Image 1 (cartoon, helix red, strand yellow):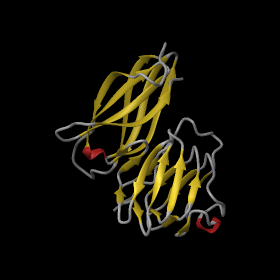
Image 2 (cartoon, rainbow, N blue to C red):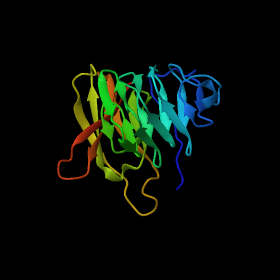
Image 3 (cartoon, one colour):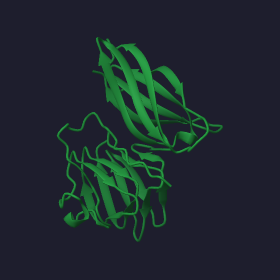
Length: 229
């Protein structure tokens, strides 16, 4: 299976962030694991490629980090602390696995606990919630006061539609539109690109993207929030 290695783009991350990948299976805190021969730090863009396992065996704090998993991110008595707006993107074929004593991912104050044997397989986005799609990017592009939202996803086969919401204060959101997922023949876990013109950005400070799951409950999962520009 072809594994996609797109990086998640997060608005809050500095344009000068370092981008590197795991070059061999090993411990997260071992410099030899990474292509930079260093340990990932705040603001870095990190990829775990297909066929490689990176293990976290102790508390690791890495705010504003971008993590894309095509191989395996393993927890064994380890913990990963990232910011509330950060994500771990698990692409098709990738997975997050708990071995031994397991561990946890803290997204801000939200905790995802991994007991021994638990697996989150891609496509998934691990943020404040665990979404059934790998969100590659979500951007708000402005041209002469007119805003167009764009996003890319991998494996949204379990998503019925996307809902776009706006907010002045990033606290109270209201719906401004929906976009149905692209269906059709071919590889169901391929990358798909979407756009949604929202018009004038006056008095709007933030936009939020939610996935509406397939199934009877049609539950909503928050994927990402971007600041209007």
